[in-house]
Length: 277
Image (cartoon, rainbow, N blue to C red):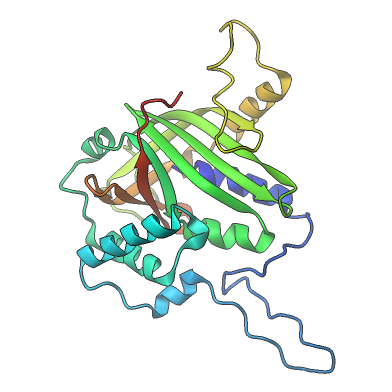
């Protein structure tokens, strides 16, 4: 489930030399003070991030309270990782600590995960993208029968560059153990083998490899380049994700991106019946 991390890391790197962002960064470790007014040596305090503020937020006393917080947030703010609040971050911590997966094995979790999932909390992406004025919304994963598709809409340079980053492949129970995690920590493993991009719009386009009129036709040069670049840049070591929480009935899941010790919370928002993989 790291396509957003992989795609966005490459995009953020490419945009690093772009114009200064319009908004100040959120991350406390990245945020600098605002310039002082002429004739004054005083500086305004840095703007606190919801991630940093969560350290001061009391954790929900019960898992039920944590779930209610997340459900209410998604119902009002949608699955928008930039709308996350300290209360939601604290609730996700409680969910992770519970290690509750409805008593399911990883295989059973995958069998029960078919549908469209969107991210509502992704701390590492928030801290990386916001200082550069880049946003990724929605960050969407679609699962069905062992297949996975990821669609991430991006907006950069104050809206001058927009579009979709997409990939498709397979998801399965992982036999690998991410560094620093115990073998008992259940994890899933992704293998993306198809990559494409699309123009901005309310929905992403389907894979050009799946929509060719004749399967023997070659891809357009731009599509062929993106596909080859995506395959070359896909890192297997970053594609193993421990699942720390899963609630099938409520449609809530939390998995970990181990390289940055970041917990990603998603909500199931729809069916995968009409999605082309």
